[in-house]
Amino acid sequence: MSQIGKKIINIPSDVNIDLQENLLIVSKGDYKLSCALYPEVKVTFEDSIIKVDRINDEKKSRELHGLVRSLINNMVIGLTDGFSKELNLIGVGYTTEIKGDFLLLNLGYSHSIYFQKPEGIEFEVPNNTTIIIKGVDNQLVGDVSAKIRELRKPEPYKGKGIRYKDEYVRKKAGKTVGAASA
Image (cartoon, rainbow, N blue to C red; front, side):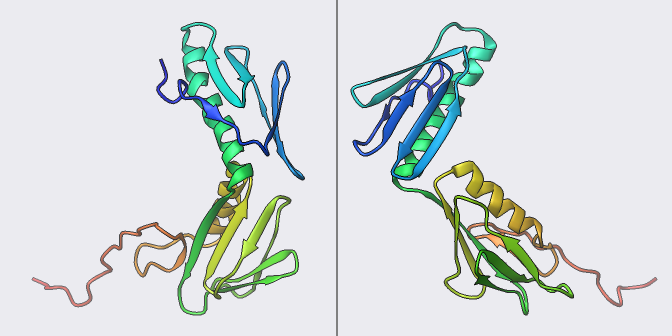
């Protein structure tokens, strides 16, 4: 049995749950998240507790058991606490700032890059080399941060580029000039 799937999910009092036949909608205030439910798992909601069970021991049911429980738990956590990712810009002249609904990035190219803010995402720029991406949907926060990082990945020789806050970039040795010749 799935160790993650067996855990129950406690629902805070300010979060609303709408459980339909094949759809679960979790809402709080203006925010609303939904998750498709599979026929291989059974989701029950009673007394502010959600429990996920599988209907049989087939491979597909075992695969979806922990997945569905994690997706529901992430929706609840997103609506109560929210998710955030921090990106750091490393390199001479690499800067960022917010211009309306756009994030203006100077990444060493001959032009500036304007990255439009998607619906449900907030950008914070505490200094000109740090970007904090916040939102209630964990998947959307990760997707947006990955797209921004893709604009200039960290390179292995000098370490310049956009990297996650806790990311470690292993540096390679460059060419050695004037190596011993025979």
